[in-house]
Length: 396
Image 1 (tube, rainbow, N blue to C red):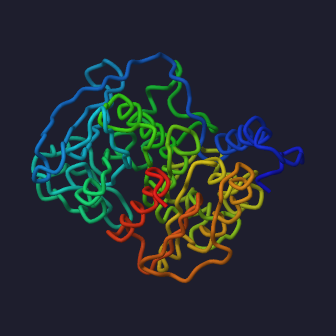
Image 2: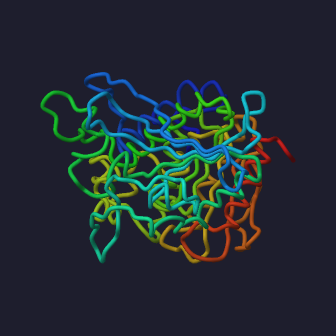
């Protein structure tokens, strides 16, 4: 029950939720699932450096800006390269709401825009059952443009910001020696403590650092930023939204186990598979729940509830059974009492709907269930934009 504390106290008021139950749930997810974000042993500055700008991008429809977000002053300090497309008319007097998300293939892959720089960092590529190093090339430009629909997002009046997730932590089990983890090690520490963050925690931290930059950009309405993620980055978007209340809206696309779907259903991917195949994603303490999901002190509906009363959209795909679309719907449904307690309309669906291309329930807990596979489609973006129009632009 998301509205009952560990000691069994019933949560009946918004005050009890915000002062007692919500902090309790956040601590449980930190200690048992995603890990705590540690405090840096030595404080380091975070530097924003604009490295390119084009005021006539996308055929004159947008301003394209690339920003290096540098974590520290050392020559080899890790950095996140943030790519931002702004609607041409966005200004200090008329700032645009924005979508923010991490990408899998590098910034050059999300658009055919020839001005986007080719990444120089290590890139991830699956090969059989392993992951191999490779460098980005011109060949990859725009290869996942359909997953990002940059021109459509800008046309609808939104800015789009994205960064390559490997800038924050390479997506393989490297003992947390690369990426941002070592910035936070104490003297003599070589890896996170069992209850400290894994890769998902680092990726979520990076999303908040990208939001820091957007808050400084006068053309962006930083109070109306939606964080979006697909698959493992959908898990990341949910965790970022749960931790950082500045995100005005959260979108989870096909996030599955460890994301929006209920762990206790044990349908599709389970905790044991996550820990076996991706031991670097979660904190080490999560491993004790492999095959013992019933012993978890939380389940994923409570992750969704941590975002309340801000709007959240859970998006599922019919053929993506590994991500358990029904479990994602049931988690959204089980978070509804928290949203209702906090004065919203919650989830507007009583039953799991049939899949439909134009599926979109637009309550404060939104739900989409479309035909097709594990992917982000142009029709998904139309739903994301429609949902944002309702909750960020307040169009009914």
